[in-house]
Image 1 (cartoon, rainbow, N blue to C red):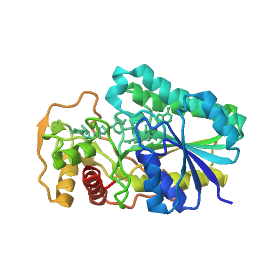
Image 2: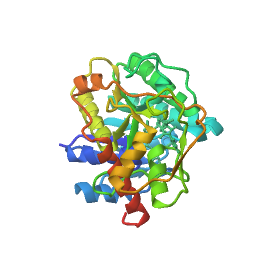
Image 3: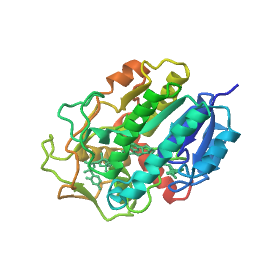
Length: 343
Ligand code: NAD
Ligand code: WQD
């Protein structure tokens, strides 16, 4: 019988790609999403890619009564991958209570119901934001965490702490937190990808929207950092590689291979890329000369960060496969397909 995985936030950007990989690996996928930042049609597109439509329950995970009813009806869930959260850093500064409520109450509700309904395993979406500006690069999982620079970032730090305490106290629960670096790109089918609301905060959607003519120009936030070309450095990984890591993590939990009740892994390529190098990659794969201008630094930006992914490489047997150019090309194909309403 197929193992059933609950994917919260499964119609969102990373959740939809992960649902595809789970289905491809023979899992049954049940999605819970309140469609705050995604569309129900994503399940049709997952079906177009995989041949199987995941079921979708439109539930706000903060609504505990509804979530409880879901667990009552679905007694055969083997594990949870918990993506559902708000993720806009600047919005979190102006709406901190919304962010703490949505990102933490949802997690607490899930952990409590896991305990009551005997669901043993959870994979949690964490972020490299927990490291702030690390002293040593590339950054390893044991690097000290820095005070969060936004309420959003704090929800990831506190979220990890809540999970650590829950796994310590409730031995039936095992967890893995995956600290993503910068996910970019889209599925090569062009059927699923990121759907940013309003003006994108993240670099790659801003690049592709500018190239498509939706934005006048890209502002490069600073060229006076201590980096080879003066622009900030990040570790951009293809969302499909990231999605595959979730399948490996969930299998590790299901097969009882975890070495601790709560494990944490960095998910990145291990390569640092400057903003200007990311622009060059986009220009190379699209053949478009991007309009951009160097402006002031963005307040709160980290100067440089990239992952040491060797723990995930060794323990999970997972490694990124796509190059920056390949990921950028899929981001561009996706931008064009949304604008021409092919999806
Ligand atoms: P996304 O917004 O595309 O997907 C999140 C999904 O969760 C959306 O479909 C949204 O409708 C849903 N959701 C939000 N709150 C909900 C609630 N209370 N109940 C039910 N559904 C709810 O975001 P994403 O980029 O796919 O991110 C997934 C996870 O990964 C998030 O936890 C995010 O913080 C984390 N993360 C993302 C990035 C990134 O750059 N995209 C980097 C690091 C970590
Ligand atoms: C990347 C680089 C910008 C936009 C955010 C969140 C973090 C994590 C990942 C979830 C930076 C530069 C960007 C633009 C630019 N998400 N840039 N012009 O800064 O790594 O972090 O996403 O957990 O929490 O804060 O990603 O895509 O915003 O920026 O020059 O219009 O691109 O300065 O150097 P970042 P990003």
